[in-house]
Length: 81
Length: 193
Picture (tube, rainbow over the protein chains, first blue to last red):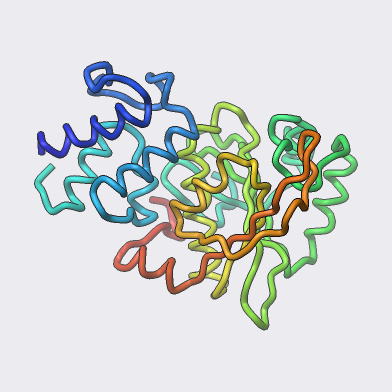
């Protein structure tokens, strides 16, 4: 799962234009000022491109912070979160 | 929650009320930031205008307008719709506006569209959804791409926007594409989660 998290952080660093190290473990729209509505949309699309899948609607509505994103992506890839 | 029609995780959709009309609903459609990408909102909107619109919904069966509400606070935060519903050919236009600024974070729009498409395809048994947006709108193309809408055409230089004429982009989502992406999942429940 660490590899998945690192890949997600890589995607986020590109979308938010931040170093991966600047993204806190509890990153969410409420505490990361770069994470606005446009960036949220771009993040969803970038994650789909990175991992080669499409999120179902039920998953889309849970992509609310870094922790949840790691859990959902891991689950989709068949990894234990 | 009051009279929920569709229940999500952070929001729910319900029929609009007279309280909504007296609240912020009419102001959203005067707000230049909110209306900047809407095709036909050039006049200030008043409570009286909003009341006329609300009254027109009373017996309408070709337009479903739903208020978007925060589940936790019950605050009315936006409006969504399926309109120009054609019951023979089973298609509709889809739209949403998140009126309250603090909810314009992307996640609420995503959840609203998830609920709305589920209503369209699962509850109203529609087969196609369509939408038109101004080509300079940065947000709608991303939101629609996430949900699998595809661009099917453009009306060239159709909308006047900030001194220039820009394209009207026409997009479509058909039921089979929506089902393929959501196979085996459930977007919403008709009872409280």
